[in-house]
Image (cartoon, rainbow, N blue to C red):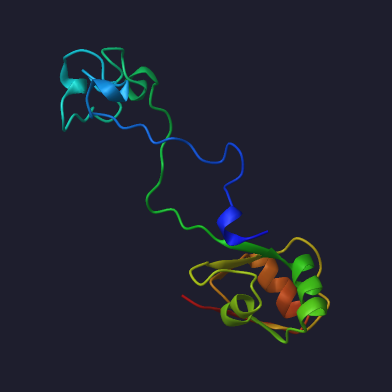
Length: 149
């Protein structure tokens, strides 16, 4: 094999279509744009969501529901999950920094602890929120809860 014998694979290259270069191109006259009208002119741009006179989808479909702009989303950890995390990562404290460093939350996540499951280890928590049952369960296990804003 020599450099001057190399060719692209069969079917991988296509002949360039030369639009707007006269009759000899095979696409002459109207340059594949059809006859007359705005769409054949230079600079044509259709309006967003225009459906040619048909009622647009955003007007056909009814509006439903409500999105609360003040909603606060939490990344939830249950007490049963926390015991597994302590075994896996060797946590002595559950804080936003520890969870972020170990890839369990993203930088902007807010963390809430819920009481599903049992907590067997004594841990200190520095989280954004915790349910009342979770707080009592953590304190019963000998741990502390600090709410961070």
